[in-house]
Image (tube, rainbow, N blue to C red; front, side, top):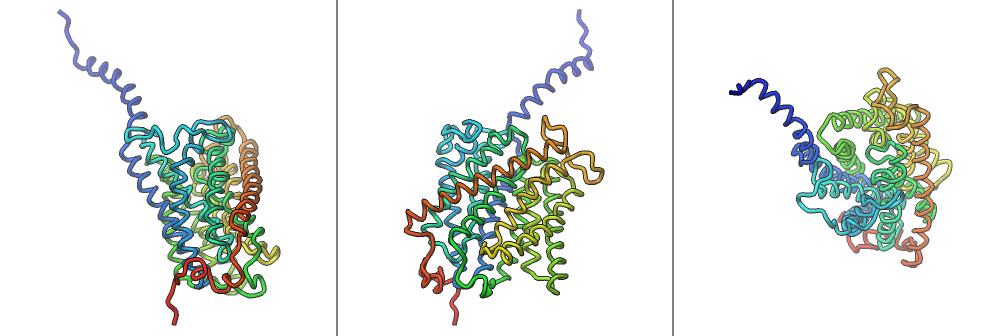
Length: 436
């Protein structure tokens, strides 16, 4: 007769089940992860509508406020449809090192049971869609108050497919920069550098608004701008924290460093203005906040709080200097400072991710370099290559797209009479305000 030892039997059962449980956990839907990415998706869309729309809307003159709001709405609709039709497949389909394939056109093969890691693939595609919405919307600040509505739509459509989608594949979709070990947690290259460079090129091609730089062009409603800025700050928790794609410690730390960098950027810009011009401005403070947020974005999953503080401080100082240089020295009418804030900030953050991810910096240490990279110099080289290639590709393709769109729409700019009248009436036959 064989005697059964219950304790040994229980141990044997656990040994048998544990590997199976570990295997199942990695291949089944995780409710906490799913709930967090659903929340993050809503937060990132909230950044564009109404956050960015209000932030930009308050910065233009009252006769153009409605045009900015409808442009943000139109881009959200257009980008969503393009992402479903082609964008997601070309960005995240297997493809090659430079572009995806057509295997996921119209979300083919994605049903309720399809998973991407521990979340539904449909949710992953939707989360990425919100990034594809906000990036071309950011560019609006470079040509605000002077581009035809039709030209804006054509430009945004081509730019999304020919610039955003390939670079998203390079960095996040299994492309060549991801394989090199580029650190871009939430969009320093994919979102901020591309949008900033595109805004600069567009501002140069279109030329300045009437009166710039001799006549001051003042924001019409800073209350609206600060309201939108607050929404951006809150939404950025989903932007960076959600990019962990899980409800885990990485997401928590990404939120922590995001908040620290935003605060440091805002305070740095505010005090620089205070010292230089005698008074701190509301506009400068919130612009510094956005600079801190944009700069921490690529590094947010790889650095600790100490590194985030220095990144935010540098973001405020460097982006303030860049803004003054672009407007006062170069006299380029990047209307809402997209390049000096997002382009410069995104580049700075991409490079600094290679520094503060090091584990040898004491209280400033991060969480290590990419797999296969053993030194700060090696990580910095990859970061530099990623930023430089993104800048070069974006600048060239944006210029080509603008030239093509100019032919399709018989010019990019509204007429001088329409610009004087304001785009609310000239383009939409509506007013943002009923002024007595």
